[in-house]
Length: 389
Ligand code: TGC
Ligand code: FAD
Image (cartoon, rainbow, N blue to C red):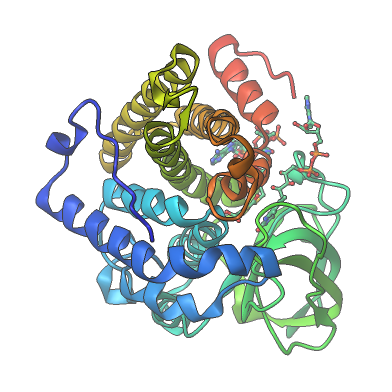
């Protein structure tokens, strides 16, 4: 059974409103009830548990900050962060589905779409009746999406789309894809590509050791006719997809804390119960060092995420500030997962405990949405003025 206790070493709950706590507690209950009991098996079988979609929608995980008139939950950025934290405590792959749906599909339609596109797609995405994915990365262009070669031609009454995207979360079962592609002038635009369009296929990527409970795949466009009304008209250029990434990366900064908390909490409980040499291993300095450093790092990450949330609520957070939090918090979580696994000894490598699954998941989280290196270079550019990409 999921016995999770939430560490709050610096009384950060006092910084949260009643609504924040309500949203967090509802998500936590959902994770305990619906995700934790089934997630290990889903990961072992490498299957996305589709039965969670309805419940995720009900707790507001699809479009937490999208206005209610479009079916979103109308919440603030701290609530959004707390939802991501709690879901990722369950599993990074499930949080990925919520991140993609909210920040990479609903956000661009809301921000860059027409009123008709908003009305047509957002309410259905909010309930999970439609699931979306986000196609930016290509086989030859990952960290450098500006080099993409996927492109579309204006054919008068429609666009003709050609190219391929790789590593796309949710692609194998998504109903729609937000696809970033270049026009005849090499300018990047977002297109809504719908399942069923001729020439559009979404093969699944198998044999992942990471994010196994999340479906990942390709998007292949072979002369796909896209209606002109499916272009997102209100922003173009690389800044359009990068704007979506800001929102998703912010959510990940919170999400990683959830994974770290689960690892820490599991290791702490285990260390108090497990006896070797006649005493609990928690009484040994080497284990205390691990646990003390974990709670210190979690607390620092919580402060970073909370302050960033306040800045985002005020519309003041910069992309570079978001990069710092994404990079720091995911790295923190991965290091904690590795240390926590050792606290459990041999038991740490089994599916009886969540730690090894978190550790493997975080190997994707530290790579997607901008790698650990790229986020460092974003900070480097911000503080020096020199681009080292
Ligand atoms: P650069 O010349 O710096 O910028 C191009 C234009 O974009 C603007 N910009 C931003 N706008 C909004 N938000 C941001 N964060 C922005 N960063 C830059 C910039 O002002 C400029 O605008 P303009 O008007 O002057 O044209 O671009 P660059 O080609 O040098 O690249 C910069 C770099 C390397 C930082 C960027 O390409 C990058 O972030 N690369 C990492 C790629 C990445 O993060 N891919 C993620 C794919 S999606 C994903 O992984 C989903 S996983 C989902 C899940 O399962 O949770
Ligand atoms: P590369 O860009 O080839 O990088 C390889 C290495 O080189 C990395 O260590 C990188 O840090 C380093 N490097 C690159 N450039 C520099 C530089 N200038 N200086 C120093 N070092 C550098 N993408 C989407 O569009 N949508 C999705 O839904 C999505 N989901 C994903 C799900 C999973 C499970 C994974 C693993 C990836 C997903 N991605 C998605 C793709 C992800 O965003 C990319 O993997 C990531 O941006 C890195 O690109 P790449 O894998 O091509 O690595």
